[in-house]
Length: 494
Ligand SMILES: Cc1cc2nc3c(=O)[nH]c(=O)nc-3n(C[C@H](O)[C@H](O)[C@H](O)COP(=O)(O)OP(=O)(O)OC[C@H]3O[C@@H](n4cnc5c(N)ncnc54)[C@H](O)[C@@H]3O)c2cc1C
Image (cartoon, rainbow, N blue to C red; front, side, top):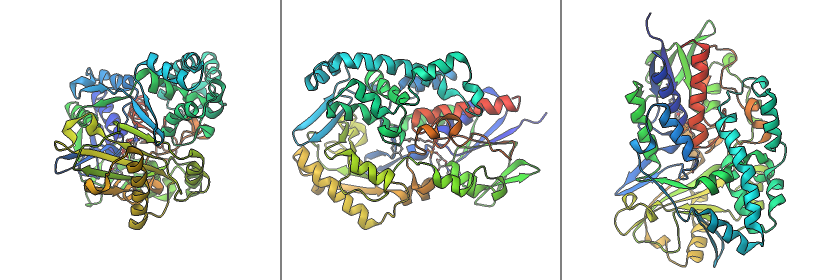
C-alpha cells in the first residue's frame, strides 16, 4: 500500500504540533507548507544588528503543557531550550510611584495582598483551591476534547465538574466574591485578557489562568520564546516531517467531496490524501476553498467576537533602562474606556493601557552589550484602519507615559524601531480582520460553539489553531494540534 500523504498548512504552534503528532504516530508522509521563510507564525523572530526580537508571544505560562507535548515524543523541553522562572513574575504599574512587583513565591504574594487588603492572603488560598481544580479538569481533560458533539461532555462526572467550575458565572463576578480592593481585582482579572475578552464576558472557569499565573509561574526560555519554535521544528524534522518554507497555498482542490491537492502560489500542485489547515481558519474557509465547500458564511464570521489585534513596536535602545522589569503592565489608566474601544465601540482608544516586554533585563543574548531590547504592545479592536500617522501618534502617547513613570529619557535612545499592526497581521498571516490572538473565549464561543475542527462538506479536510478548539494562546494552540491529529488518526484508521 502506498503511504498516505498528509499536508499541513502553516507552521505556527498548532501546525507544527499536528504535523509532528501525525508523522510520529502514523506511517503517513507529512509535509508542512508555510508561506513565510521561517517557522512559528505569530511566534516568529527577527534580528537587527544584535537585537533579537520575538515577534509575538512573550509570556511562557503552563510549563506542564510544554512538558506534556515534548514527553509525548520521548523528549523534554530542556532537550531544546533552557527555562528560567522569573522573579518578580512581572510588575503592574498603576501610576507614578504606584508600582506592584508580583513575587514568584506564593507566601510573598499573599503577604503583598494582605498589605493591600486585610485578609486577602487567606482569600487567595480559597480562590486558588478552586482555580487549581479548574486547571486540572480544564487543561488535563476539557481542552483535549475535539468538541464535535455535546455528547463528549455528557458523562455525569463531567457535568458535575462543569457546574463546579462556574461555567455560567462571569470571571468579573467571581473575583469580586473573594476580593474588594480595586488593585487586587485588576490583578486577578489581568490573566483573562489573554483570552481575548474582558472579565465581564469570560466564564469564571478561566480563573484557571490565575492558577497558571500565581501557582505555576512565569517562565522564560533563554535566547527567547522563539527557542520553543526552533525546538518544535527540529523535533518535527526528527520525526520525518518535511517542511517547505516560502510556499504559500493558494487553493485547496476538491474532487467528489474530497480534497485531493493543494495548489501553491507558484502554480505547483501537491497531492494530498488528508489536509490539516493550521492557517487562520477564516482565510482557509473563505479564500482557499471554493464557496460551496466553506464551513461558514461571511455573516457567521462577521458575528464572531474576535480577540484583539495589536499595535506593536520593536525597539533597540542604546543604553540600559532603569525601573523596568522583564514584563511590565502599564495599568495607569482605567481599563473600562479602553475595553469599550476594543469590544463595544471599536475605535482607537484615547488613553490606551499597554504592555512593555524587556527581555534583555533577563537575557543578555537578545541585545548588544550595554543596550536594551524592548517591545511595546497596545491591544486594539480588530479591523481598524492603521496608518503610519496613527502608529506614530500612539508611539508618542505611550512613550510620554513610559518616560514619565520610569523617570528617564527613552525616545532619544531608540536606535532601531519597527512598528507592526493590523495590515502586517493581514499580509504576514492572512489574519481575519488583522486579529492578533484569534477568537475570544466567550461562553458562546466555547467548545462545540467554536468553529469546528472538521469541514462539514469535505471529508478529509481538518482545521487546527487559535480560531478553533480549544482557543487562543500558545498552550491551547499546541494542544489544538494534538487534538486534530487524534481525530485524523481515529477517522482514517491511521
Ligand atoms: C503580539 C502577540 C503576542 C502574544 N502573546 C502571547 C503570550 O505572551 N503568550 C501566549 O500564550 N500567547 C500569546 N499570543 C498568542 C499566540 O501567539 C497564538 O495564539 C499562537 O501563536 C497561534 O498559533 P497558531 O498556530 O494557531 O497560528 P499562527 O501562529 O498564525 O500560524 C499560522 C501559520 O499559517 C501560515 N499561513 C497562513 N496562510 C497560509 C497559506 N495560505 N499558505 C501557507 N501558510 C499559511 C502563517 O504564515 C503562519 O505561520 C500572542 C500573539 C501575538 C500576535
